[in-house]
Image (tube, rainbow, N blue to C red; front, side, top):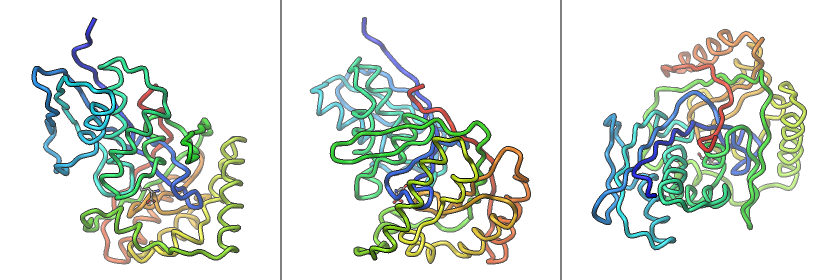
Length: 305
Ligand code: HSE
């Protein structure tokens, strides 16, 4: 029997976590996008923006579904009701959440029985439209939940259940977000890197995996060191170093740019002084004349769960 509609909720996510550029992702329960996909009589794909958040005409959900329709030769049309919950352009996997929900929803509606790597691939095609290049860290986290490690060529994603007591403090600065922000943030990155910086990042990245696999929050936080991406992107976030340092001084185990920014994410334990960490980050942004909202959150399950 044909299914007439499906509803999928996909979480926000943070990518990179310092040294794992385009490889590490973590689903976080700060925000969710919700999508309802319904069959309709014609063959088109129609987007209905439920809560009227300003979204790009070429949004990731529509692109993901168009790609899937084409790949599987599906002529039936769909209406996509998008309830946007993840703030757009702040480095919390907003475009990925819509793409992830769309891929899972379309898969269910048309009983395609795709495996998770295929869903991630299709959601990644949607992501490409927003950042210019394919990266799977956010979509993989949003689909699978928890901590994800993305291996490319061929794509394969590994997941690790994060420590139960892991908490994240997000400092979301109120700054003007450029059009195609992720593309811009990717354009400032170096085309060549020093071997010693690559070794530094690699050792921190492997240590982070060790931290996740051994439920060691301190090790996870202390691995948030990156000499490649942070160095080139920090100029895009007023007061970045100050905010990062103040989070650590207030008790966080580590902090870095969340994805392509400008949100800054700090890693802490349930028993850390989480409000104090948030306050310190907010104060540092304020000292740069930047208003900022803070959120305490924890890892999320993925949209597939
Ligand atoms: N890994 C990507 C980047 C995530 O940092 O550009 C973007 O959300």
